[in-house]
Image 1 (cartoon, rainbow, N blue to C red):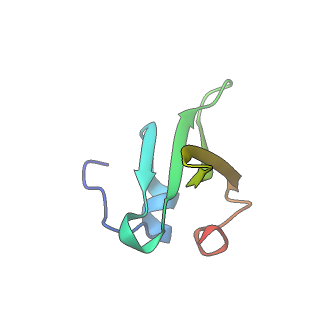
Image 2 (cartoon, one colour; image 1 turned 90 degrees about the horizontal axis):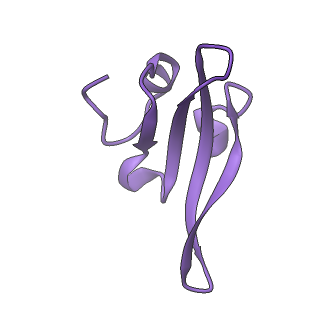
Length: 74
């Protein structure tokens, strides 16, 4: 997945097969997809939201894909 989209699409999320963080660009206001290797093979995909609390950057977990869809995360 060499081409990262400006905004995530359902197709990109479904087909993401390399570990990494994929941001939703300007449309997601800090929304990101975190792709990590699973303990028993395969990949885990989860949603994060980057925010500032008391001026400090932090990341909030929104849930795992596909339980939480792109539309729900947005």
